[in-house]
Image (tube, rainbow, N blue to C red):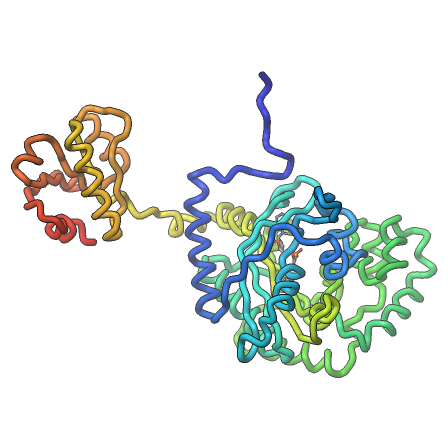
Length: 425
Ligand code: HAM
């Protein structure tokens, strides 16, 4: 029979790799905890309308990349392509604003689904760690997010990072700018691609997302929103730049950075690993002050970011920065048991030691005692405990230190105190 393969654009995370993922997940959790974020987990699918209204019909994500299906109840549902819309929906639906004094700071670690062309670092199912903050209008939270990311990537040893920032303004200045942009584009539209014609109709700023070279060349000379900001957006942007300068975080202002989602207002940013070019975008985010209202909630400012796990792993591998992360704690104790009685007793010892925090293993394949010790050694276990009929009768524990080759005889008490002391748990 022919073999069935995984769907295009997906991957299996094998045990070798999952160790690195777990370590990174721990670091991510620690980072968010230290900045006082709480975790949120929202459904993997939502009503399609949420993304159409939240992310925007004119975005590539909604118009080309969503996994949308009709369920048995004739409802249109979509596998979540990004995290912000679902978290904003949950924020409104669960009345989280009333439950927390001050800004609501939420983080997530979640699978996302986008029908994208297969490419290095680009998947149809990918994982993002990210956060969303609701109820913080000023630039101090924008700065805190950027500093947190900078600190995090530095702690992983990644320094060739490129932080690009821009302001996409507010609903006050955008309509005027839209007219200006359309005016500039009018004589060039016959050279623009079909997608850009559609974008000019629905949301002209989306033209800046276009990857087509001719379109990009024309847009290079187009007027930029950053030069036409209202006073409030201007002040907001200046404050972020001052903060980044103060903390010596290098950045570049990129007036073409509009980000591919419609909900952004004021701050937009992307952090990439410079040597990898466009595949190296590690994190994208920004402010979305109108989104909560757009989704039927009370007017509430918002800001957040999403960061690709696969790209982080790829970059850590390519730069060789994973060794200090992947060093696994060794197995503390391998119980070498021979005979039915010993096998049964081994369970009790293993349970007690595991409850105390030791990492333990035993044999399940019927190996001889000699072969079991060899297996323990091969697995890198620190200690092997020998358990046969003699030991059970004499109530002694014979423990070999596999690293040093020495051997100890310990007394067998209910709480295994001596064994725990020897192993250090
Ligand atoms: P995004 O830029 O579309 O933003 O995605 C965020 C990050 O997810 C990207 O920078 C990239 O690292 C990773 N990513 C995106 N698509 C893929 C893919 N197909 N394969 C692998 N990695 C990918 C958002 O999704 C916004 N929700 C971010 C946000 C949160 N803005 C405000 N709050």
